[in-house]
Length: 267
Ligand SMILES: [Zn+2]
Image (cartoon, rainbow, N blue to C red; front, side, top):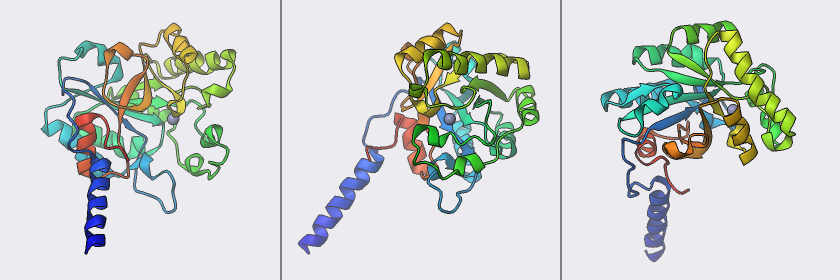
């Protein structure tokens, strides 16, 4: 009996740490930047399940924001709202094909918009090994990526805007200053010229960066940069913006908790 009581207590403590529903909400006037990668079903044996939010769940997210009067913005509009409105920026990293096939029609349906942080050399590029050579499953490399034609259509629709995410998705700490400058500055010019658009925001590959990278971003006339640190927007850190992670491992309750407080829980 005592063992059962202890087991129940441990379960409740773990549940409470996982969801932290008791943690105070953050004012809705602080912008939420949502971080997505793929909108797709889970695949067997994938270690990247957190990166895949299902189509049904993504639609639930969009419906939640719409029903609760959140205004969708693109990252270039961030400064317009200055902490006095209830706004959300949907962002996608890397450039997966499902962003066109699945996310694009849903964004249209909900009158929403999004920012796509696009890798220029995204085809046949296994960037997960650049961070950790043990990550050599090739899962992300096999994942189909967007074609330039699809991206042009997404940008021309005015539903998507593009953000920089480097040329090859390198692990920035491994690069020299010159290599970093090339990855960061060139990706902006290439995107702007290829898609005849303005690129004002940047996402650090793997969310890993140093202060010298922040300096390069500032000098490259980017207006903002996002990390993978979890939280809501603080306009004081416009080049190190936190995002709210949309995880494929989450249920809808967990998603709502993340929007409320910027993160889900402590474990
Ligand atoms: Zn990335």
